[in-house]
Image 1 (cartoon, rainbow, N blue to C red):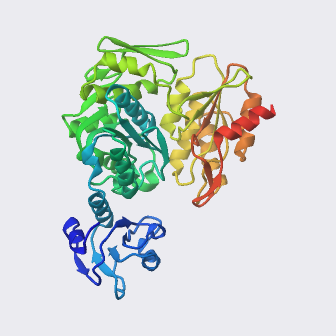
Image 2 (cartoon, one colour):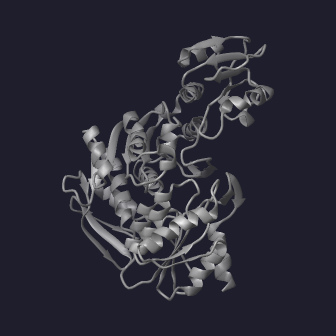
Length: 477
């Protein structure tokens, strides 16, 4: 609970008008969440302008409005004008929550690819080796054996603080937090006390939002500005750049001999990958090459925190992986069916290169409507360049049309001499791949993973499950 004067002490403001003596019990930037005693922060975003919902927030019980635009004031309601509404939201939320991040050791992971697996692996190793760890990641938080659904890869700061307070109440000592570039840029973890910031890699994605790769990289580096210790993949050109900007960064990699944690003698055999780090041999139950990088990232963090490589090796043997990250689906058809959340050209290329030689490969996928043309074309090229038969279907067209999205994908496929078929209904696309693949072939179902929806029109969510749809197809056969 905060008095009006305490709110003024907490945030930077340009002017204010106090019209009541009500204490603030909570803060929100969604008018639908507002209740009696709330402060409402009007944020002008890329799609919605929170100032349009001020009257709704007041109607729901808001006694304090924080805003950046010129607005008409109402009797009985207090107002604070600020320059940065997102900062104000974060600072008030952190204060009201009593700064839960300061009561745990927090590891935050960012990057274009590998965020979820690395974040989940860090959580697993911390829990196994040090005990009492939690994880906040894509659509899900794992705290004390319970699951909590989340709104985004990185939830709003109010949701993050709420989840962190649950962690504190449950006695958690460590938290692994997945952070997206949107989340960092929109200050969803602003003011959170981060001990380790991890950067996995950077590939062309979200340029509809960031516009340039330089802006995209700068958004990722907000995490490094905020973290006490930093860890980066030095094989990635942007990871190398991060090391140059933050010289004390701990590095990992395979190709770069100067990596602090380097995988050597990498061997892929019998569906497994083995490698050595400083003489200690690791074996992963996967053929996905990029999992070596994810494991190295997690290893670098927990070893810097005091674990030994031997402890990490033993704990890794118990790790069963993350759902929809190179996840094999059992079937009676002799097919290697894999569900993977991969949704970038870089991730596609990494997946396809992991397939052993001599196996046919199918990929069932679409691309989000908010990706630019170059991104879409590149996904098609990734299929063609790896001799993958592309079954082009729907993902989340959103505010674009499926025809536009798929036309760009197909342009990339044909430009590099690839093979494809376009089947707009995702279930029928899966059926096509399953019925045309031969025994031993690989079928990748890409892009949806654990998401339980399709955005066929705007941001409206139509219920959809990749796993259940595949199950229905397999049962029908």
